[in-house]
Image (cartoon, rainbow over all chains, first blue to last red):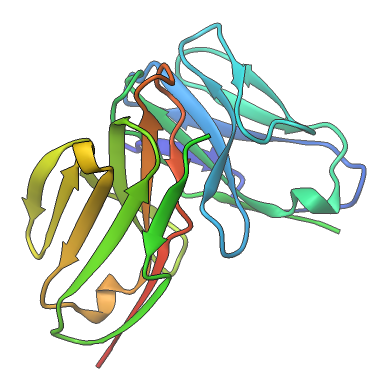
Length: 112
Length: 111
């Protein structure tokens, strides 16, 4: 089992460019999440999808959009990247509700 | 929103020493997890422990939900234990799916 897989692992963007971060899980989990981690801080929730077909905003959703493509895949899109979006992005999944979450290996994004 | 405080923020140990990391939270929770972020940035699940005590090898954790804290014990520390330890909680009335992370404890284990 691969668990939670994110692509790409590293990315450099210029201000104003767009990109999509991909996430896939093979654990048959219902819920998926996107977090960002800034230096010296814990992770903050950007968006989550409690189940296929639903998405909701988390703590820091501005500047992002998400798509729950199917039960396995949950993508995060930056339409017009800004330097403030330089961060490490983590995707996670869980069965749902108050259950254990498992994280991908992260995507390190730099916006110049 | 819920506040999650971890202490100490930084910790340096000699190999073989024991340590206790603490996580305080400001609301009733229905989910609490401990993670280890290794020097390569990977988040590794240590414990899913909304209440009670669990042990896994040299690590153990205790959550006292009624008093709103959790403790992570590391015994006989090794250099591979270095990294950042995070606790994350999900509040009882939040409907699930919203882990809030503390700012972590940075641990360095030296020879």
